[in-house]
Length: 237
Picture 1 (cartoon, rainbow, N blue to C red):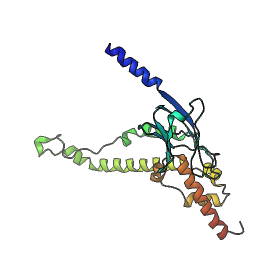
Picture 2: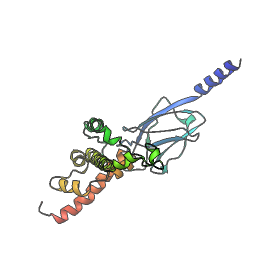
Picture 3: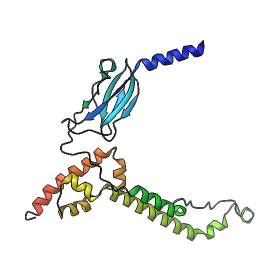
Picture 4: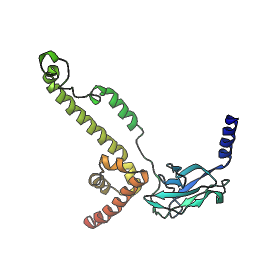
């Protein structure tokens, strides 16, 4: 009887739930927004995908709201939302003419994996324990083999650091590539080449961006500022 009762309660919970889905747009309702938080008062949540779409299952007594960059919309009671239609939302954010563009070299992921495999011994290298127990009878737990191999350790750590730096540099090239930047900014050459050098982001900055929209907006805003200065300094070009 207890098992049957639990099954009935579980069935009631499923029946009492509804799936809400839709697309989140910017203020102009022209551009879909990825990385928007879709939350409920009960604690459930999800995020819009790269095309701005979302889907979330909630009970009818719940409410749903949208949050982006710390700003939230009002809460919408689930019972008032017709789940037979998409529940689209427009946020008070202007994306201007920044489209959702994805222009990335497909080979980066595979090149990185191949590089890691080729230099696996270096990437996985760990400095030896100088206070190990290899020669406990010759001293107070002093690992003489590790001490004599100190030069090799330094060389491996230096090479490891260099490989990591090269990997991060390739990642920046992969994300901040000329094709993408030109499509977002519209900058012509040679202004584009100068912009690529002066506004090249760091690996840490790109990783801190919460989504592609934030990264693309950085490129667009910097491009507008750079182009104004460029035209003043190069009036004949």
